[in-house]
Length: 358
Image 1 (cartoon, one colour):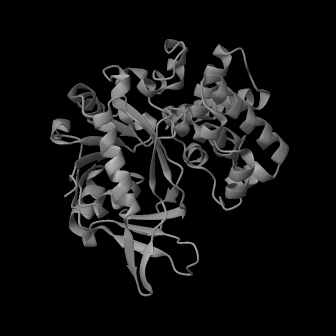
Image 2: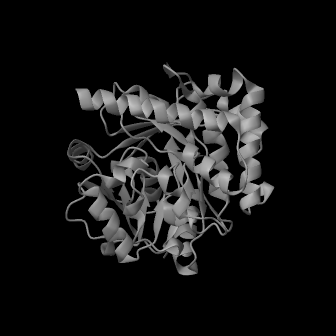
């Protein structure tokens, strides 16, 4: 009988996609989230809808029908030592908020292996990449001190490639997958910790959904990789697509960001690709531009960073600035990336001024 694990996931929106997969293996998941989300999940579970190739209708996963058990609650009173693995599925600026900050620090001190599912790699993960001046990268983080007590080898990165949204017309326990690709996670320094990831990978591979036409395989798998650079494949996509959704006075879809000026998108994408290779990635760790550009055809919404800026938030994840600062250490720069960083800086400044005046 395979081991069953207790897994803590901070963040219920994107976190519920990974949770839906983990619950199939009979593992238990506790989601840390807002009170309204927690009450709803505890009363009704959550739903994940995802498209399946070759099927007209989407599949809806109902957490109440899965072998594992899900619970939800706030950040207070959670003891990370009660868990085998912790998943970080909030946006990077959220980790400095009261309650969450203290829980994150308790996670660091507990020495429980921790997997980030953020676009923005936590600072301790970046420290697993040799040859960088890590202090010089701190300005890319909303509050770099929240990561101070983590051991780099205990924190891994899972590339959040699958795209999902919460449909505004639905309850907050519904997640709609829009791009059903795989989660790609790098191994931990410790093989025992990595064996948890490999067990989850195996369990998720075995999942079959009871559809009217019989048992079917579901997309969105977990893939465990030996290279720490595999999750960095997302950086090229973020800079060529997500951050280019942000315009001077608004936003555009990721499809438009990539395909309205494909040569500029390719230039940015390949600049970041080459930077990752300079850091130590093998080209095979990464995703070629053509494959990404084809996937971007279906990205008919502006990226979450663009939507957040539009909604007036004072902070967003700054993977754009992180890539710019890392490139700078290698003596490299790209005018489009410099332009993106300056634009995001100015739009955040405008949002902060507006909030201060309100």
